Length: 236
Image (cartoon, rainbow, N blue to C red; front, side, top):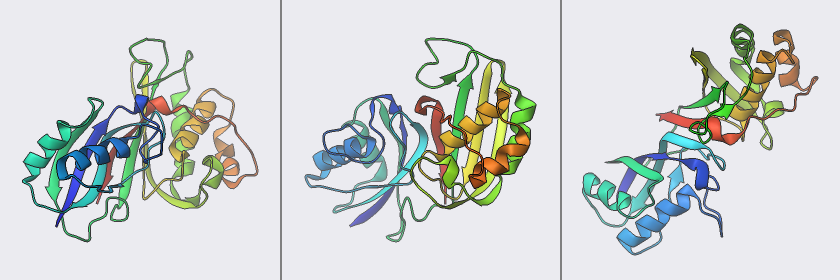
């Protein structure tokens, strides 16, 4: 038996998310199908982050156990030879039997990309907003999100406490990048955070009201769309 950790990149546009689902194309399902071709048996993999439909990844992590040993470079080539071109296995390594892509993770880093103009070449990977956002207000508001808090009111389905380690706001001409790091994320929490910050940048929400929105005493409705979101890396 061999325990494997893989680093995966994918364009999430044509996938119904990471997690395997009957009758739908998913990233997990594609990789498991490739493993079945290689090993001639069903092999279940564990993902470090369950990205939603349309969300991309530069550094998704998966772990799984295979029945026979292959050189990790050979396994990487075999996987890439049996999956579609919108998934890339960037690396494979052998790890201890106790390693689990999800439960062994310390923090996860996501980046959300915004383009304040229109371009057909940005549609798949940016949320396009035809207006200028007030970056100083966004940065001021982001400080209210840092720490261990109950973020249930910014997520769509999950409830619970997350430890938000860092939020970085950077700009490049007409592009805005919001990078968020936490120990874990509730479902669609990053998109909820970004939606909140966009409304602040539009002047619809005052930075001092962010704490009220987190607590649930004040509501906001924007949830940023999936195409601008990337899972960048998972730290162990």
